[in-house]
Amino acid sequence: MVLHPMPGQPRVILLKPLVTSPLIEVGEFSYYDDPDDPTAFETRNVLYHYGPEKLIIGKFCALGTGVRFIMNGANHRMDGPSTFPFPTMGGAWSNHFDLLTGLPSRGDTIVGNDVWFGNGATVMPGVRIGHGAIVSTGSVVVGDVPDYGIVGGNPARLIRTRYSDEDIARLLAVAWWDWPLDHLTEHVPTIMSGSITDLEAAGRAVPRSASGG
Image 1: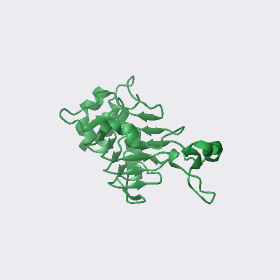
Image 2 (image 1 turned 90 degrees about the horizontal axis):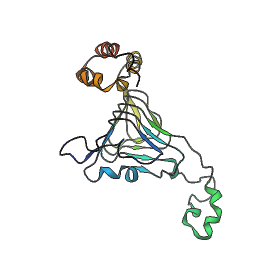
Image 3 (image 1 turned 45 degrees about the vertical axis):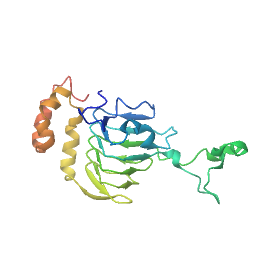
Image 4 (image 1 turned 120 degrees about the vertical axis):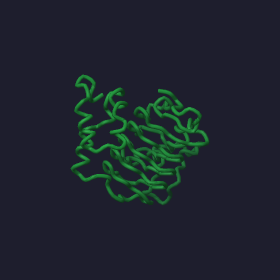
């Protein structure tokens, strides 16, 4: 819950102790890196967030500078001659606010655990990004990203998956991000550079009373 986890690096900020909006949920240790003002994440990086859709970010996610989440409030009507949102301008036009209700929604935007976002990536409304995924620099993510998938481009396309389907299932079963902190700390080298077999062995050593938290 320390706002700035890296001494001498004010550009890096943990998001969980920062966010105040009830429409944003962030897991432990997920961080945002920005040389200008990382504390403005809620207003500069989560855009058109009027609700009720939520932005949910898991644990241990790394967000590069300029990562933005476009929320469903950005939608305009497209079934008439004009897409301009007249009622939002106020005055007599506000009498027609019913024209802005019931716009299509893709639901919550959900980011799994251990996801790495490159600089300037953009995530569109209602996207679901799986655990262990990598979103390349400058990508515009318009569709769901599978667990441990690497995507890139505009629109972002799946470049490859980091592991085979069988190994992805093994990694998801281990779910190291849910380990108790002391056990996770003990096995940082395995988490960062070990094999899946090593990770599974470490996972079997998690105290039963503390696992799955």
